[in-house]
Amino acid sequence: VTVPGNEAELLARVVTGDRQAFELVMRNHEDRVFSVCLRILGDRERALDAVQDTFLTVYRKARQFEGRSAVGTWIYRIAVNTCYDQLRRMQRRPTDSLPEHADPPDPAAEEAIESASLRPEIETALAALPPDFRNAVILSDLEGLSLPEVADVLGVPVGTVKSRLFRARRLLAQRLGNQTTP
Amino acid sequence: MHEHDLDLIAALADGSASDSAGARSLIETCPVCRAEYEAQTRVLAWLAAEPAPEMTDLERAGLHRGVRSAIESARPQAVPAPWWQRLGYVAAGLLVAAGLFGVLQNAGLMEVGDETAASETTFAAEGAGAPAEEVPFVAEDAGEGLDTLSAPSTTATAAESLTLPFAQFADEARASQVERDASAMDDEDRECLTQAGLDRHVVVREIEEGGRAYLVVMAEEPTEESVVVFVELPDCRVVFEDR
Figure 1 (cartoon, rainbow over the protein chains, first blue to last red):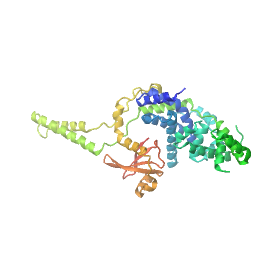
Figure 2 (tube, rainbow over the protein chains, first blue to last red):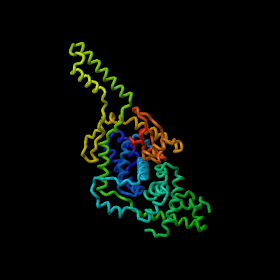
Figure 3 (cartoon, chains in turn blue, cyan):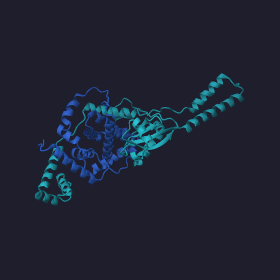
């Protein structure tokens, strides 16, 4: 179990160059960061790139963590901003090919796409939401962050998060119609 | 029916309502409120049923390898030394050369025009004038797993100082939470950003570094974590990105 206070201590050790502490921080958060990035970017390769960029930023900027939020919240904020930047770059250069990886194709990833991605109808409905609404839903309803945590990650007041969530769910309900709950 | 009431119903659905009793009475008396409650709870149930995506073992190993490799191979970007610093190197070189010349002449070891001495003075000037172009970010355990990554050596401090001018400008740009919008840019700036492929960006400021001028550029809605891009003038070429 990761205790927030211990996480702050770990990050303080990262500042001194302790890479074992960095490894622990990364292992504590990499799964959720991957999940957030995949849901924002909708592509595993791009999500993995964003996760890597996120943790490199964490390593580089550990000294900038001021302890005003939990370490996890700070990391998810970096992750969301990294994804925003990647989306902006994609919009700027829409013809970019997918990132190149030296690794051979991963057969397990094909299965993971089937078993762990959003159902297509939900993915389509989410993709149609305005980005601010979509990110609130991803962090709150899919990732389970609390309202204050989502507000901290997105840098907006809690009231704004609530408002975005309510409207987003309303739009999703309209798009998904009367489908039965799985 | 006010939107406020609908928000109260939505809050009841996700458990964040401060006035649950009021929301419940609305559901009982107002059909629109009931429909809103059902729609919100239905969507919450759909989303809650979605499985969390997971990395495969291969993806995880690749991620760890990529992070480790990026940290270990992090080298400072080549930043040209400022002109005054380069002048300093040249001056220092000339001083050393002059000193050497004087010593050799006093010792009677050299006549003016002596080729051996000329080559020595050149060597001395180069030694004094050449700044370290690249100081590796030392990786002591290259090839080991993420578990055994070593702490950066003190050499890294010297290395990082080379990137300081741009990194410092980038940090300042982020810290100021840029408020300048696209309308504040002149046509020349806008044209330059277009040429650099940075249409949805704004020029935060213009700086001079190493005798060259650069535009400091950020995305239209910058955050503390935004990438800061440096565009060299007059070519409008992206030369550095600070992440």
